[in-house]
Length: 144
Image (tube, rainbow, N blue to C red; front, side, top):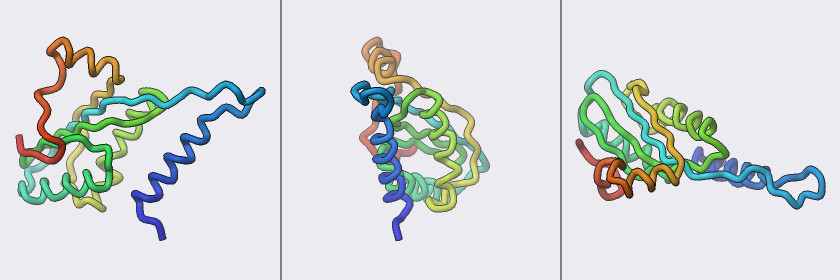
């Protein structure tokens, strides 16, 4: 039996294959996937810091593209890169992330209170202009 991570990888491979055009001569590729930088903010009732950290570490294990997480006892912020056809697809995946992993990663029952999805060019432009995200922590899970 395949686990959730294996099934997700299989699904991504199928989606990538499905992006190849089959109409006409098949020589024009369908719209290609792009990279989107996602910042997801969640908040709720205070939970023990050790449980929040453990849950975020499990989420990082389950979702291999997770870059960094910051957390406190009543809120957290998750940053990662998502490969998707367009902003709508990237946002839809991001909005499902917390809920779909809440039971398997034993995440707190917090709600999503913020979402930012920007394309790769915008992300790099912001960083170059000094308006990017706070200085990057090393990849992983860190307290605020």
